[in-house]
Image (cartoon, rainbow, N blue to C red; front, top):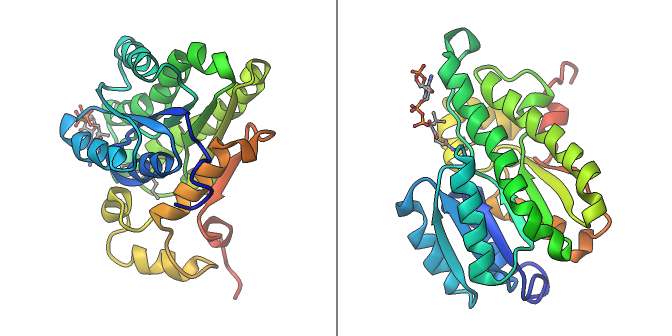
Length: 259
Ligand code: HXC
């Protein structure tokens, strides 16, 4: 629990990718603050344990199996979440794919898979949720990154997708403000204990990232959860189109050439 336990009381959220990693943390953080939570993933085995942990926090949980690349499946699952909870107030677009691959070795399908999951998936889910979010003035939170602020080797596909997500965040904020719908993003740097860091920060990279981070450590899932709770709560009621970097200052320091 990070804020008042009633911060999101009575609200309902859908978190894609909510079975594991950062988005599991967000789902549990929302639940601890009174929010019913549906989590969506391609893999059912990722969902059940997290659903039990959501329910243990005294709210309702719903497991939804779908691939965010399939717009009609997404539409049906979003409708199911809204029907189960009687409302939908918050959508977190966290479903993502990633692997290390230099651009010269990346196949069209490899590039397309990540664009389809991260960027097009965010669009499909946001569009499907709009009719429900409009009813009470809801919130969308996209999970971005900082990889695309500079050039990150072997991350062309993810950088392009996350840059697109930033554009989508700002455009939807501009278009959907008239419905009372806010659209923001968090941009985590390397977050310890996640699949992303385990797979991406190999060799000396973890040590280098820690050393270059002004705040002197990698992030934690809870660091991202706190930022997400803020942006999805009424405390951020006049904030839309924002991309909140949660990286301990790492990206600002990444191009350091002078000591
Ligand atoms: C090169 C690869 C590859 C690899 C897959 N591909 N893995 N190319 N190197 N390591 C290529 C395949 O060869 C294929 O192209 C195409 O990608 C699709 O692969 P499939 O396995 O058929 O696709 P699919 O089953 O849909 O899997 C999607 C995936 C998957 C993205 C490729 O690996 C995935 O979902 N990964 C796990 C998700 C994950 O790690 N989530 C955490 C994200 S962390 P061809 O041409 O052969 O058909 C994150 C944080 C970023 O995003 C910030 C960190 C600091």
